[in-house]
Length: 396
Image 1 (cartoon, rainbow, N blue to C red):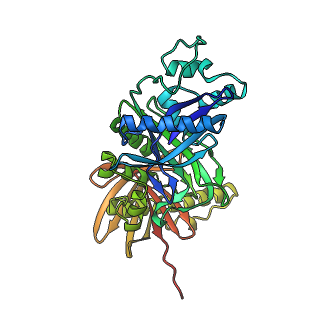
Image 2: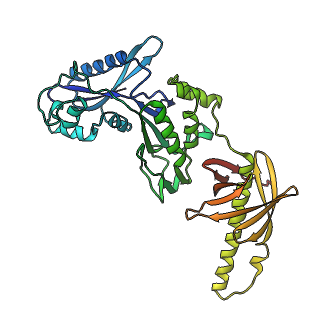
Image 3: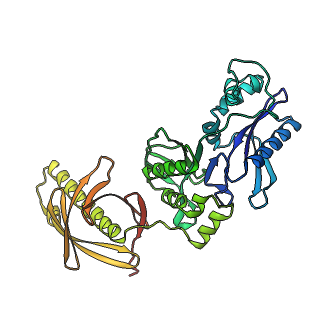
């Protein structure tokens, strides 16, 4: 797609473009620019055609001209002109240095495109100058970096990207010099069932496509969203790591094919998941019993019946049609002993301010776990990977 802007004086400028081939049911997942799959001379033809269309219909404002491109034949075909600013417009801003909302306002004020400082700078002109620019013949400055964006949605990748809704307890993301992101919800917010599923957007930049891809992967791994909704962040990371995406051999049907064939899955350590779930449930049970006992003391009640099972009890975990029954022994305030099948391991636990647990187990590795009990089961996040452990209901 080519980003165009037209003014009331009959001018039209093309501010490079974006490749949005990674789509799921015609909904964009990744957007990137500049489009590297098209040869420079072919993409220049796309820009010129978009400018001619913009001028011929007298279009005023920012818009997007979309094409289908056949990489085998180097032919492109017109799809549509979107008469609005698209949600992925920061990709273009990152490439060109042109603030598109500000440009729209200047167009509405009647300022010619060739008088706008940011557009003049993009074309290598003196920003305070007033000389006209022939946007059809003159070329803008070469673009020497790449921008790659990912949409963050409230969708469940385990169920074909089915939209989810509910409360959001926490959204954590820290922008860096290479990655900028925004979210439309915050702590104690939520997404209702009638809302669009997208609630965030990340934009990564680098000197080339590969560096931008790596920066986006690192940023996605840092996102922490907790609550009743699901999100496909781990799945997006796996997509970015596929050979097809790295080599840019994808097309608009690529992702739908992966989803249908379940070619991309989020891997996890089964032992870590089961042990993490046992730790979470055990720690939560002890915490509840202690709070209940302290509440009784505050009311002047000194019965210790609530403490009879606080130091030794059993907990059950169901995962992948297997039941694991752990014997749990509370060794100290921050250490539990889990015994399964005669084998025991002592695990140190430290609760974080955000409610997650830092646990040392599985080859003396420190893991970060977080759990949330839901009507259908226990949703665990182990080292950034989300896993659902279903409840087992007794029909009797």
